[in-house]
Image 1 (cartoon, rainbow, N blue to C red):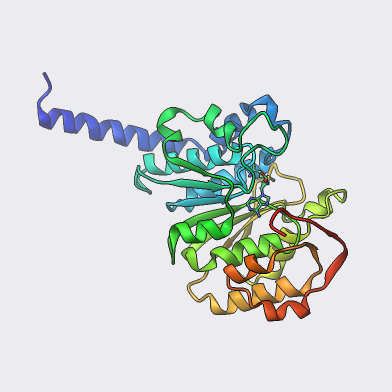
Image 2: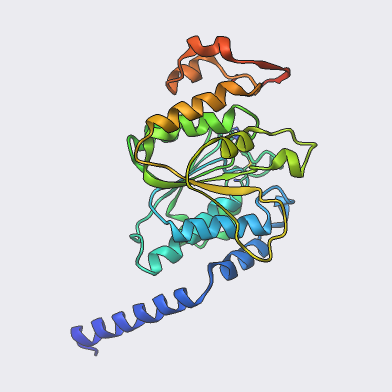
Length: 287
Ligand SMILES: C[S@@+](CC[C@H](N)C(=O)[O-])C[C@H]1O[C@@H](n2cnc3c(N)ncnc32)[C@H](O)[C@@H]1O
């Protein structure tokens, strides 16, 4: 039987080996195989191959628990985020008891009502990783802010309603809950340019409008117009909040938002006279 000292030497050799193998494996390799193994029923509704690489790399390199995702849908991106944290934990950069909490306004997966929001993560993740994920639905960014309180969110992925003003509202709702230096990844930052049939300008207005440290894919294979980007949340939120309010009121809203929701997330509703509602104003469940 191995002595305690031998067991501990073996354990540290094993952990050094794991760390080396994690370091040797470019995150892209894992992201690529996870992307190729996505369930067929997703039917192209989740992040693209290159966007998955970017999301995985950002979460792996800037791993901080808890990760919050706004917009679970199938749960494919949730599983990807969970794996990025798993690799980060293996390399000792985050604690193994990391948390991923994902929020969706809809209990069911929007593109296939026989599936629940998050089912791809339930199908793809091994049990030990799935334990690290909490699925919250129906729930929105406001709930995330309440769940974590001031400075409690380490990393966030916003991929919910892409029409203005929702991406800006999602960030405003959670702004005080983000840790200093937290990375926020935004999806669909060029959606209406790449797919003019989807007029979701919200993430583009947000990403283009903020003056912050930003990152886009630097993957040499990625020849597409970038549709995912990361911003870094500064310690001083005053200027950022003012900038977000400017973006919020500068562009026409293509979704109605209830007064109660605006009030709940601290938006001064007397500023509503500045809101220009688009003629194609559409209803949102929260409207
Ligand atoms: C584009 S899908 C998310 C895709 C997912 N992140 C992935 O990559 O597989 C958008 C999701 O956001 C949800 N959603 C829409 N508005 C929302 C809101 N205000 N808060 C939370 N979720 C919302 C929708 O129900 C939908 O499931």
